[in-house]
Image (cartoon, rainbow, N blue to C red; front, side, top):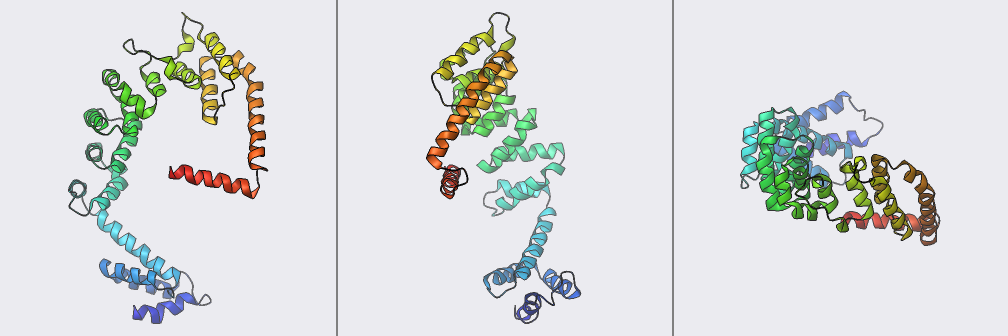
Length: 309
């Protein structure tokens, strides 16, 4: 530290003499690189705590330490990392998780399955990470672990995996738990066409009902003129003055397009415009001008509170 204070501090503090990539800069880079990992970590901690240390110097030490650590971790075998991960007393669980996630794309399919299986039995962060991967890149051999972990945790991410990929018989048994975790509409969209499933429309809002009908391709039914029936439902729903959130509005529009409700879409446009203007007028009354500091601060506070909740 004394050597760095005497030689590196003046060089990096002197903006006139410092030049990135100069032989002096490369010299101090090499000096930090030569230190053992443990020593470099200690030096880095002392540099960070020293208010007189040039910022570029402790950032350089931090970067070199990171590369050293990542290089050491990269040299470990996947089997070793999995052993560290499953042994909660190894004190290397966090490191193993990060390295396994980092190298996952380059692993063989067999190794990927092993990692996913381990993560499904692990902590929430790893379990959800594995779930998000399996939701989009399904591996049938992991059906059992997904079903078992879903039953044990009722985790929404695993619920999405189950609803998308697990057998219908299993989903029928788990329909209430899935509805609680993901919403009744999601369950209806997946199971609504199965004869053993009873769709209770009273549990759905009108936007949700439209979404379910669209997902089930109900607009093609020859027995009932579904678009006409739904047009009556929409008229009644809008006449009641229900306020549509942006998500509900978008879901309605997507569903109507999917079902083929062309005339209803043309008919509803003035109503959507009127509602949008009413909401803008209300916002102006409550918040004032769009760009006023009071409104921006209020909206910012709401966003922060929403993230916290």
